[in-house]
Every structure is written in structure tokens, then in C-alpha cells.
Length: 281
Image (tube, helix red, strand yellow):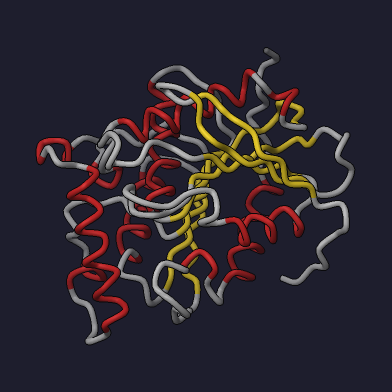
């Protein structure tokens, strides 16, 4: 998918409310800045729970909102594991969704459709925040978008264990292992569904999901297994495997060569969503 960046692309720095206090966030708009968009995407960055910030996915989100000016995107930080490990980050994720629902007038959002999204560790938070919203009675979500998600602290899938002789991919696996050690220092937490959604036995009544895996990604199998489990539980789920996209540099996976594929799938998914409509606050 290709699109010319409009001159009226607007990016605004702001603060949102996390579980324990304010968090830096960034709002992305394209088109008429005074118009209310029907869909708000709350996006959580990658970084393996231990690193990353708003710059992590900035270029990707600029492209996403440029291609889809009918949506507004709220990217947010969350508490990193070095400051406070699990469950601090997931509590932040849910708190930001609740804040967004209450503050739609600040976000150029009509309040109709709220989606949670993220990449890698951020996709874990997106998946978990959907579980938490269901379990805690809100906020109602219209969808969840999981891009190359980290869902299995056990690193037990075939694509993670049976790596080809490739230093880049082996580095990803090692990075994931180190990330989980930092995020889940208490081994017992690794079985918690809010840490390991792939192991959850309660996946019914979740919002529709778009799950994007990648052919050459060690995280591929856990993403696709999660999609299969959601489908088995009656959740409307689309799973797409993106073509191989060799890394230009470590840590730049959200700027991958298959960006156009991801943008097109996300636009189609959001356009197909019928609801639920958010109640007025």
C-alpha cells in the first residue's frame, strides 16, 4: 500500500493516566484536525518489556494514520520492567484504555470504536488488556491488533526452538529470553494468563482480533497458535503470515520491509469492524 503523506499530518505530545501516574503519549492525526474520528487505536510499543519508548514505532504509526486518516492513533509509554516488573505494564495498558474512553474529547475521537494494538511486547500488552477489559467489565473494545506478538514466556514453540543457523534470528530468541527474565522475575508469574495469554484457558468473549505473524520470525508459531485458540473459542479472528522481511538492523522489526502488507491488513480489519459502539461518558 502506498500513499502520499498529507501536509496536514498532526502529531501531538500529551500525557495519559497509567495505573500509578502519568505516562507520556503521542496522538497521530491526518486530515481535518477538527473532525471526530470513529476509530481510536491505542498502540503499545515493542522493546521486550525492558526497553523502548514512543520513538519505537513512530515512523510506522505515521504511515498508518497517513494511509487511514479516518482513524486516530494514541501511542503510549508504559512502565518498563527495570522500574517495576509484571504486572505494572499490563495495569498501565488497561488504565490507558480506561483513560481514553473518559477523555475522548481530547483525542479527536467520537467514542464509537476503541481498539488496542501493539508490536512484540506491546502486542502482549494489547492482548492482555483485551483480557482485562473483558474481566473487569470494560472498557468495551471493538478489536485487537497483534503484530508479531510475544505471547509465550516459555519460548516453547517450534519456530522459537528450531531456529535455522541464522545469527539475527538467534539474537531475537536470546533477546526474548532476556526480556522475560526481566519482566517476570517471579517464575510463578509465567503461568499467569495476564503474562502468558497463549496459555490462558479463558479466551471466550474477546473482541475481534487481527494477528500478524512473519515467515522468518521466531515468534511466528505462538502468534498463529494464539489465533487458532481464539478461533476455537468463537472469537472472530484473522491471522495473516507476512512474507520474509530481513532485518536492516536489530530492533527495527516494526519498520520491516513488509510494512505495506501490515498497513493494508490493518486498514481492512478496522474497516470491517461493525462495533461495539462505546457508550457515552
